[in-house]
Length: 349
Ligand code: AMP
Ligand code: MN
Image 1: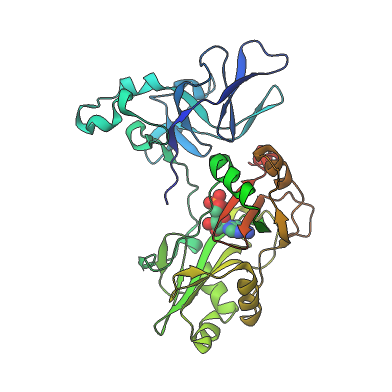
Image 2: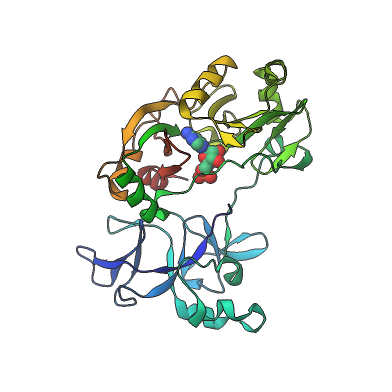
């Protein structure tokens, strides 16, 4: 699943902001986005760009503050969308009128992207030149590429609750139970044993064994190759790599560590249940991401309530640092989502 940065959405509602005349809030699924007052009407279709989108200046020059230069990413001038607070109102993402698409030459795109043919959910990122902003990866994490991420293992990812309003309704009705873990801010790590071979991967690539590479060095520190080979099962351990040089090391850890959040059974092509995952983590002498509870219920929790729950102190570091958020994993079936703390996002540098 690649993240759809810019999609066609329906505006669910518009809400006034106390004390503000010129702006109001547009509600799009679970997202709240501040817009110019009167620019949209509830029910309108619009282009919604999620936070972390890099928006070319050509389509939204107003994102660059007066007197500042635009940023550059992958050779394109533009701005990265961050979570902001305007008049004490949180605003996430950017809403653009559907007419923005008229700026583009749609002749080669087929009928699909003609404004009159677009439907809710359509991805217009490529058409608008909108990509996900990515921080440059430090050399010690990037490593040398051995190959693509194996197709027999799912890449690590989690969908944001703000994009799951429909699913949330269903899950609530089904009365499922959930395991909540702390979402750790680091780098994605996968180690797997399959048909006699052990490998280490970053989020998208398989890496050559090399002690200079932090992922391999950490795998070796935990003696994962020997342990997983001795176990002899075709499984993948998926963890967050934390520590010095990784995503600003917000927990101020002095050494690298792995916080395991999933174990995938390659033979059955299924993730282990939270309970089986816990057993396997113990068997391999690894550490799990912090488990806050294994019996949470969604009951009548709204997206806003779930997002509030994401705020809090991290249990990872020594200092009282804020947590990035939570990941909810269903105990009965394979469903999961992330709730990123808005307090954390607002404080992010
Ligand atoms: P993001 O970091 O926003 O791309 O969110 C998805 C990623 O969070 C996953 O690919 C994992 O690498 C990472 N992650 C960190 N903590 C957890 C956790 N407790 N459960 C699942 N994934 C996690
Ligand atoms: Mn992350």
